[in-house]
Image (spheres, rainbow, N blue to C red):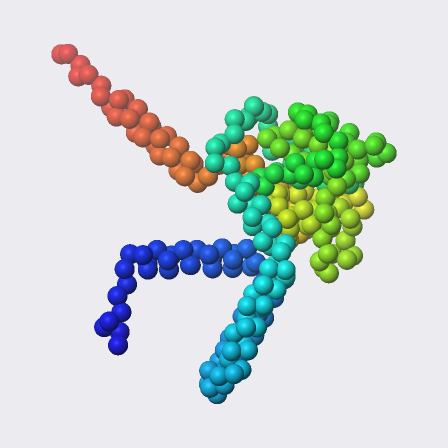
Length: 291
């Protein structure tokens, strides 16, 4: 029976496309509540199909087939937030690299210093770093600045009772695009006891791919929201190195020399070894003394 089965090039392409689609869906909902909903939906569908197939219930099989169409449509409503996030991520991809005008500014050092300082003096902060998905829609709820990033500017923005200390700021291309912005609040049950800054950070990370830094006004603890999850770091942990790793994810173009990729570090190490070996050979090539 299998001898008559022929797999052509088009079949391989279709299998590959289907694999990419399934992989993208699983990666998108992995670790979220939507993954549990998707798993429950698959269990119900498989159970109904196996039940009607094993007992050969033709009438019930037709009813199940019709119900599957409505169940599939209902999944669009259930997963509307994930679908919206996926479409925004695809539409927000930049096919041409930007020309960064602030490359000379040590952005990662400024952000790290400012966040650590606000953590020590317990000044609440909410900083969103734009990545692939644009945050311009959230800037409209705040005050546009388009200012050069600096330690003094960040401290002055979040220090109460100044008018811009409430809400969050948006960092784009190494500069402060806007301040006093309103971010969507997450409805996760795990965040009921958390403050509005933390819930707003998680809410923004659920709808975009931004990396959001939060400084607690009560405890001074630094938290980072990304992909719908909140990562809290205590004072016992090396928060400075953790922040640099997150900043490398959020702003790879501003990564410090020590935060570069392993490929660049290996290439430079190999170049240094070759240079040292070449100079060593030159020192050995001493001309013979004339007797």
